Length: 465
Image (cartoon, rainbow, N blue to C red):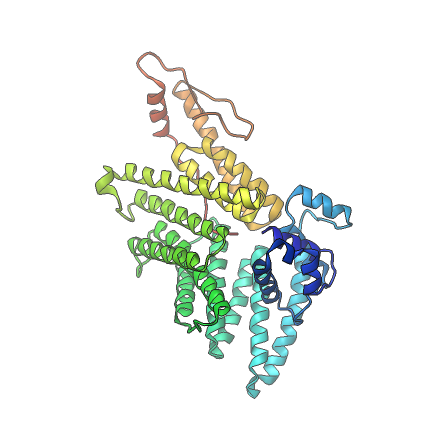
């Protein structure tokens, strides 16, 4: 991650540099990061669709600013870059719009050429249009314009199917599975149908990648294929987990969704270990396992599944055990991501989101407030105040504050003194100071209180964004 940040920091200065120049500046050979550099350079070319084999051109200020906001995150890095003359806007709305305009013009030109040559059998133009659709759709998704991104992905899929291009079909299905997950995470009214569609896309992507024939003696090609395949399995695991939480569909019960998610994540982890994937990729699977565990607890509480009841006494106890296990997994992943990527990273904030959600389930809104407040602050810094995901985090935080206010009111009725707020906007301990009489201890007061306090209505979803 550090090498990627340093690379993009250099690009953000708006200079066109050859690969050899960059390797010299970054001291790739001296630091022994040759393999990491190959992956970064290859990914940059693939993601940006660069026509040159040796140069990456940041021609548009919009693209440079997008890179700055997404990858140069720490205040120290921003201070250093500012001294060199770079500017860091608080919001990227206008710059995203300019970037979209530039890319859309390219797409329109390519589509015009494709329409003119459609009957000539020229597959190159069709491929260019598909790539352009994917690139623009991914930018739209990052900026929160999910509906527009979905339309472009549909166009790319139609072209890929028309051209019988299985590779693009798999890639588009994979990105759609990710997009719909992120879209649902930002929408308080996301439906079972939306999640069923996202799960189906992930399943299609996994099936297609599994069907590809890869030459065993070409290690680079095999490694790239297994990375894509494992990513499809990751999204399959996440999306089927959420489908389980929502009760499944007519054709896929909650129990089936749960087992499908578990199998996908087990296979994903096995594959990533086989290709010696980075610690970040291993932690990503652990995060998804935490999501699955949380969704199982939710489905169990709602009566969608019955796992573990026979050995745990009753539904409530079984669900509490799953919530606790999920909490431990998210705490582990949070510490790992925070230590390696920093607090203000999109990966870290995913764990923060889930820590807030599970804390609320285990100990109520007072325990979740500090995590919720942290999520809002990070998303405002990284994604901007107007991003749909930031707006959703703010709605969740407001719901927690409302629930805590109701909790405090009930505490007073029960004769329990509400505890003072701590520095994180929450309350210390369990939020209870008993004023009960001799016949009622603090534990009794807490049980009585929890029996009357509903959980905050959190529209949380589990991604990545």
